[in-house]
Length: 77
Image (cartoon, rainbow, N blue to C red; front, side, top):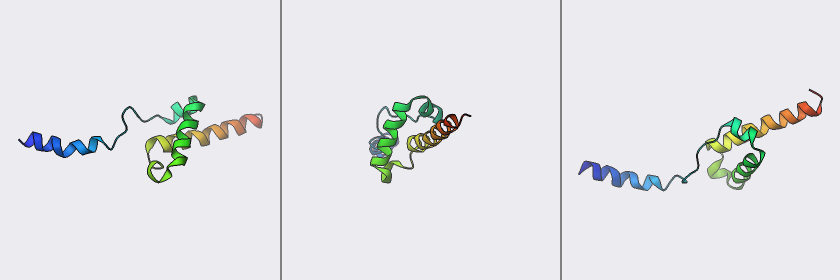
């Protein structure tokens, strides 16, 4: 009976997570410009809910690193 009660209490939590969306690393976002751009667009569309999520933080970090890499390359480095 306790297991059933515990299951019923945890069931609403399952609705809080989007299915199939795992966290990508900063390296993943650096390697895939399209993935990074797509995630950043989502983050900018809804910053109140998404800004503190791992994917938004990692995509933002990767975007900063990609910008630094492009600037370094443009300056001949």
